[in-house]
Image (cartoon, rainbow, N blue to C red; front, top):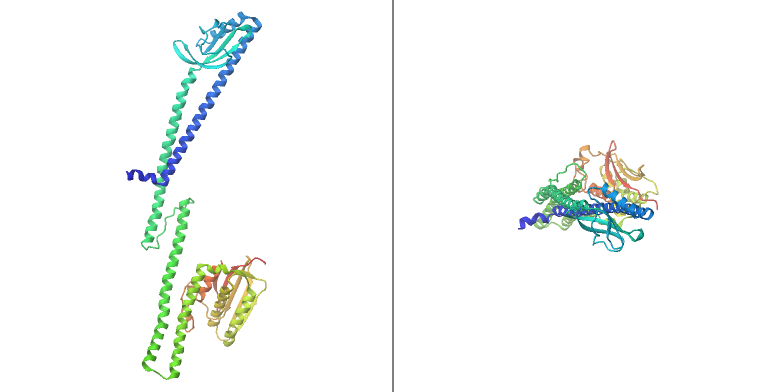
Length: 458
């Protein structure tokens, strides 16, 4: 029983049944309306013919007397040998004087008007439409038409109505079943993909058929979501591996240093020096976690609540003042070119950190007495570009895609401090502000550019 009722629980089958009922009801209304209008039209036509006949006979009676009226009735009866036309002229006592009815119809009342009656004619009971009028001179006139043919048409219309409703219902059910099968096949594909994802196969995707129907749009949305999930999972997995790798070295060094202190019990000055190195190792571990927490905060989007108008010329001045001592220590030329009046909507602290990270990288990799520049300028498309350039070794083309990965440190990073999260933070900040980070060759060196939409004029 449950198996028989199971298809009825399907949305597509219920939808098909609903459409079937709607089609059947519309067919009933259509055929019913057709029948009503057809019957009304035929009645009006018959009533019109009867009225004309009755008026002409009345005029003959009024203008030329009884004999002329009787002659007119006899002519009409002779012209309709099939008996479809009915005429009866009677006196005040309803005694027949002329016509093809032997007696006055009992169903016709004394009041003039139209009547739908059944008369026995030619040995059969037939539907008849009559009109009684009070003729001149006190005579009574009945003119009518046999409408049995129209009555025979009624069951044909009803049969057609039933067949049309039944056919529409069956076609709608068949369409519902076909829709059910089509929907089930597409839902089955989505279900199979979801089951594969549950089993851990994040590379599975919902098949798409390159159409514009709702299922293909849903498949594209689901596939984009799965792609994003896979990237996030891979990022978490890579980040976990990188964290384990980056923290293992300072923690191992810290443990070895403390173990050596416990074992050797050195002099006070030497012990304090080793403790200072241990604190540096701990600071390195804390820096890793702080950077990861900052990235998680940026990726979550919670920092959008702190967005406001940020004047980039002021931000460039602050960054230049912060990193000025480092460039002087390296005897590098540091130039800042920031036009006033340029602004973006964003988090001022994150933007300062992103620009600071770019300048910090430029200072690290620029040679002694090298050149570093910070330029902020408008673009032709209404965006603003923040570009930091240096004349250091640059980044090979093959590595430019990888340097924004968390904890990635290329061969050129050997001998420099850092944990491989600087450009990851910059890229995350750009993404949070609906911008982008691009890396290009400076020949020699690197140009790191942040592009973000400009804020509307205040």
